[in-house]
Structure formats: structure tokens, C-alpha cells
Image (cartoon, rainbow, N blue to C red; front, side):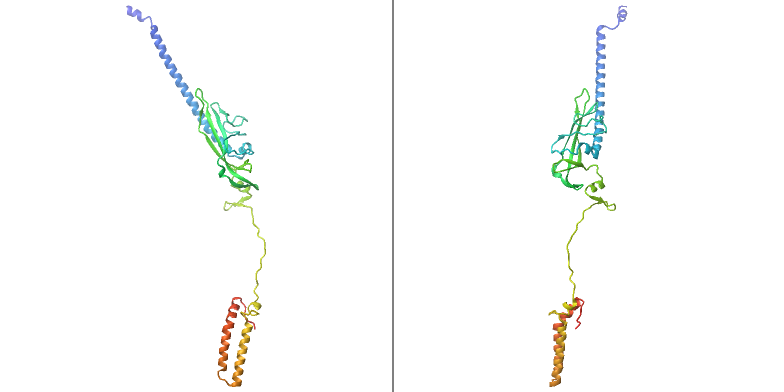
Amino acid sequence: MKSILRSRKGLSLVEVLIAAAILGIVAVAISSVSVYLKSNTQQYLATSESTEFVRSLSNWMLTTDACQSSLVGQALPATSTPLVLNGYKGFGAQASTPIQTGSAISLQLRVNSLTYFDKDPSLATPFMYNGVNLSRRIAIISLSTETVVEPSAPRQLKTQNIELPVLVDGTNTIQFCLSDMNQAQACAAQGGAVNPITGQCLTQTSCEITGSYSQPVSNPASECCGFSPDANCTKVCIYMSVVLLASSAIYEYTGFAYADALGTLGLAWFSYKEGKECFEKAANKHCGCDH
């Protein structure tokens, strides 16, 4: 009977305290898990937002508008220098607020660092743009974001670099960006035009060579059959006539039987000696002996 009465009195104080302690531990564990899951979820969302923001900003930076609003007129530094981007309206843009170091992209994401610098001065190449001699360089835009999720400390995410071809003048001041130009625009900037058939850029330059020349004209009368001592057909013809007359006269007055034979031999010798060069030269120059 006493044991029954004792059981009806309920839990003892010690039992109540133990039960409360167990419930407290379970509540703390549940709370901790909830906070952990929430923090991880926010970190994941912030990382996803960072990826989207970097992609959006990169695409915008590769346009002429971005270059004109933020880079043209700025000196291209050799070392990392803070950069302020004006006119960005993509993912994470906050009204008309420029993007720079410390800018809040969302409740759990902000810009940790935004700088730019010359990739490598040795990579500079000459570039003619609208008739002006400039230098083509590669500008590096370095962007780093960080997550801001309480109670965790800010966590920096991977730094992203955007390479942007730019044109600078003699003072190293950015004059134009080449990233948004198509082939036709780039060709036109250099004073040329794209050949629609070959697809090649043809510059509108030309060369003019001035001067004069004279073309010698052959004169057959003077060069072949005229007064040339090396090839004078008239001279050969005279020799032939003299030999024939002499041989005939000797035969007529002396009766020398071999006079005609000697005359013929003499004629052959003169013809070979004097006539060969004349006739060959006449044939080469398309002229003949007219005497």
C-alpha cells in the first residue's frame, strides 16, 4: 500500500532535473544543427551569387560601353591599382552605385578587391587606329569577392582575372578597348576593308613609283648594213667585186689559167672572213644587206 501511494506522488526533483537537462541538450543540438545548416546554405548561395556576378561583370567588361565609362582616359599602371567601374547594370548592381572594393553585391556577398594593371609591358605591339600610332597592351582586371555570413568570419573566394586588350598612347593612357570590335571594325580602324571573298583585311594603302625610262630602237641601216666596221655588208660586197674584176683581168691579159681559180678562192676567203659576222648579226637584228 505504501509503494502504491509513493508512485502516485509523481517524479522526484532529481528525475525532473535530469529530464530537463536532457531536453536542454537536445534543444541545443537542434539549434546548433539549424544554425550550421543555415550558415552552409547562405555560404552556398553566396558562392553561387559570386559566380553569377563575376560572369556578368566579365561579359560587361568586354563591351565598348564598359571601356568608355571606366577605362578610357585612365593610365595603365604597371602594378595593381584600385579600379572603379561606372555604369554597370548587370547582376548585383545597386542602382547607380559604382563597382569598387567594398561594394555590396547582396546581403551575403561583397567585393573584396577590384584592381587593374598591365599584364606585361613586353607584350606591347604597334597598332594604327584611325590614323594614329598607338600601342596595343593587355590590361588585367583582377576581381575578388568574399562571403559575409554570420556568425562565420568573411571568407574570401577565388580571385578572377579578366584580360582586356586596350590601346594606349605615348603617355600610357588608355584610348580604346579592342575586345568588342568585330573583324570589320578592327580592319576599318586601321584604314582598311575586309575582302568579302577571302575574308582578309586589306589596308587602303598604295605605292606610287615615278620616273622615266627609254627603250632603245634598233636601226638596221646603221647597226648592220651601215657604218659598223665589224659588220659592213657594203665592204664585203666591194671586196667581192674587186676580186672578181682582178681575176678576170689577169686571165684576160696574161692567159694565166689559174687566175679564175685563185679569184674564186680569194672570194671565198673574203666572204668567210668578212661576211660571216655581218650576216649573223643581220639575222639576229632582223635586218639584211641592202647594198
